[in-house]
Length: 212
Length: 212
Image (cartoon, rainbow over all chains, first blue to last red; front, side, top):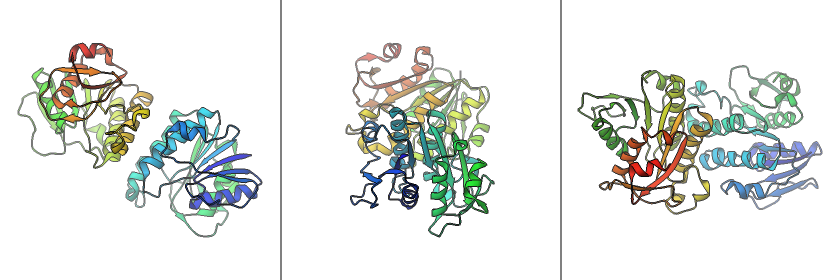
């Protein structure tokens, strides 16, 4: 498959691209960094500016992309330009290109505002508002075959290959497990038009994904 | 008419309430200020927190309100909580109440991102992103009979009673004229489901409104 990964130099993006290349996909990664992130014949790179106008973003996206991942994040530095407006411009651009599949990395309970008073979310309210309305746009205002993956806190620790999904709780996540989950969603048609929460757990990722 | 003015203590809100009371409407103004803003038998006041949850906001809104004005603004201090999420929660609450008419004070070219590189807008990008998606919500995600009024820069100067509408330019506005325009929209059914740009001009406000 030919896959566009928006935000390839991020903590999740780096791990996701690595896994997609290992699965023999052709990957185009976007980053603002100049150096090429991966030395692989199946990898190419795009300097994509999410603060540019939607048409400028669209003109940089190949027509024959099969799936787009949005795993970019401003790290709370520019949530409005990147996590909200930047994300929605990519949704609009991808849809106008005629590409159908769009997989969004979001955050635990991004669509469930009743959970926003919990510790860990309340401190990230501005970020959550931005993720919320970007996700809402995917759900309500796009015709894309989206999947929204909503992990809790991301931790730099080795993956376990096991997660929990939609159990009503939030929780920590190994970044490697999040990337494995994102990669597993690629061929899981049951996840189309769905959003799911995830965190570290006891169920094999493929098995957990099948329950979405 | 029984009218809810969200943001009654703002520069536009104060002038708007004054005009609505002069037109013998019953006005409920919302503000975070404790003292009552207007000494008038037709005026009452609500301490409405736009950062509260949508259901809490909804519980404070009377069922028999005819029209809601949203003229609140964070003054760029809390654009995400007030101008975006706060506004959308009021839209949802008003709709869930069964109230139909909602008049939004927005900003010049809030819905036309191609104009956002112009001076005066580029410096207010975060504010514009918030107003954009709040307005988009009204247009695409609500069933309300909305009108979106989009003036350029607001100036504290005497009104002229004359404006220009949708001429492709932005420009300054007397706050009094903006309030008069908002009040005139109340009974102008031709403005329902419309957004229009405005600035100081040569056309009587009622006449200009009729062309929307």
